[in-house]
Image (cartoon, rainbow over all chains, first blue to last red; front, side, top):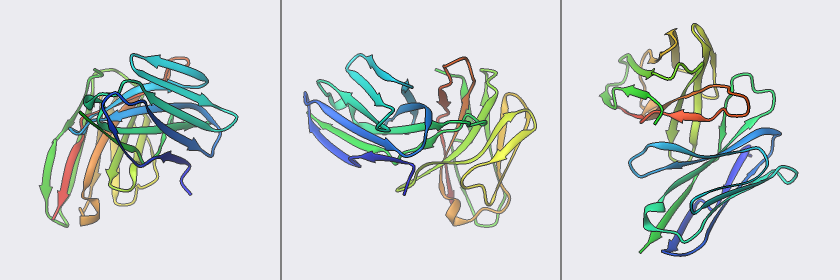
Length: 111
Length: 114
């Protein structure tokens, strides 16, 4: 079983819909990251969370440490949000500052 | 954008040939990483470095070696490339700054081993 599981693996939405991507993990963590990978391949960091909630524009990320679960929400989705969204966690006592990655959620937003 | 470049960006090579990928950063970050990304597997850590000449193995290190002789450069070498090493390779950097320790990714190198 992977340490980081994302759902769904694939998601198709209509423009304007509210989108939720989920991430569950099985280890104790010091931080959780949400990353975005566009069709061109580049990977950018969206959020780093250790508790609570963060918001940036139409993106909202939440984390529940007790339940080992995080969600990424996109409000008023747009075709330019089409990308792969990746959840990654940093485990406790991680001397190498390393991340463990989920398999990604491929999102397509149709106009 | 974090100053991370990878070279080459694309490479096609034959089985059994040596290949070296370069990651260069201008951020003076301590940590550098090499990942491979394959369909169905997500990003997997190959090797990482926590300082000049300080490196360690990751999840999928077999068949790969690394070197870091300068803070800014992290080299990944495939001593004898195999078809199973066809993949997209990403370099990343990070630094501890209190609670902020995001990873920044390079643009990736697409390697095809025939």
